[in-house]
Figure (cartoon, rainbow, N blue to C red):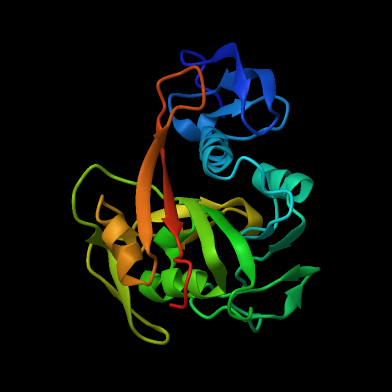
Amino acid sequence: MVSWRQFSIKRHFCSVCNAVRPMVRLDNNEISARCTVCRSTSITLSLVAALNEIRPNFTNLSCYELSARGPLLNYLNKHGSDVRCSEYYQQITPGGYFQGVQCQDVQSLTYANQSFDLCTSTEVFEHVPDDHRGFAEICRVLKPGGVFVFTVPLHEMDKTVERARLIEPGKLEHLLVPEYHLDPIRGHEPILVYRNYGQDIVSRLLAAGFAHAEIKPIKSTPWAFITPVVIAYRDEGDI
């Protein structure tokens, strides 16, 4: 989908390709700005730029990505030594497989403690019913000194706004008018947004067990889009 008034092509450094590439802007939003070679959106480009800054060489690191497709997974497979990935399928028991892809529920991961050096995700946690459990699980499966690098739609407001919650399994309460995002993996099936994150996402990560967390604004395209990348570190000792 193209807005021809916003359409633009410029050359710019691509953090995923590690080279100057033609980049295209199809519309005036970060999802519509991407590298024409690796097809990474501004979101992925920003995450990889932040990752390269804090872990410039992760050749020997074990990685877990909360998606089973896309340019970020391709990048991790190219540079990481042991890369796992997954999707969430409601009808599949966590740890099982669907069409060759492992199913995981980030609220209850089947991986052992201290399994990974690095965990990544893009635009996932706003869809997790209990994000505290999800963050705690990521912290649990990280090795001491491990890092979680991820993005969510992040707003300038101080406090996260809860939009919906699960009262009990199968019983949902909407606190605000429902908001949905489309999911191309599931045929553009709309997925509920449980919350709109504010700047307090840092304190939410600390409450889940991380030793330190920060928000790093990254400009990864020649246009004005700045994507905040969230980085959370597990401490060097036991949780």
